[in-house]
Length: 209
Image (cartoon, rainbow, N blue to C red):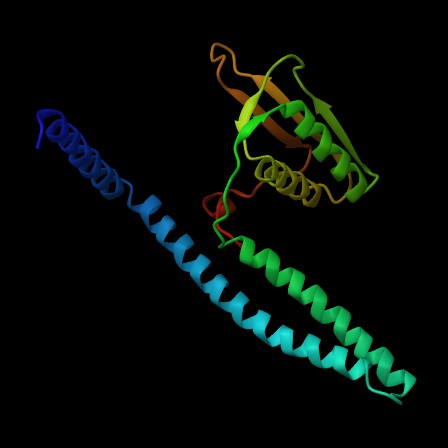
């Protein structure tokens, strides 16, 4: 082993030791990660089983609709079953997204374009009693990111904000280059709702909470 390789190995061992020590110093964070992993495995298993069941239901409903001489009422009910199975299948697909690892494609993107696109979607999806505002610093600012993930994260925050304002209010999405840190950009979503109850804060990143 060359001196350089020996040095690199020593650095790696030191990093592993440091990581283990940090886990021991933050038991709550470590346990939270374990819980998330177990929930992900459970959801993935259930989703797979449900997909198999729904596949059978959908197949039989479609075969039933193709039967000759089928009464009109039975055909209509088979159509209802087919539509319900397809909706359930889409729901299961959304659950599987929580556990699947996909290839993220990071690229240089304009945050203003993402904010404007999300704001447009949100305006058409929420109550007319909620005013959607954007406040973005225009310029040549670009960030590295995975566009679908960024859009989905902002959409989730906006939909949560909508739930916090059942009587209406204001929803604001804004970007800001952090003062003194030219390499970082903040994207904020704020609303005039009641906010998150203190007891719910530890569960913010738990799927299905």
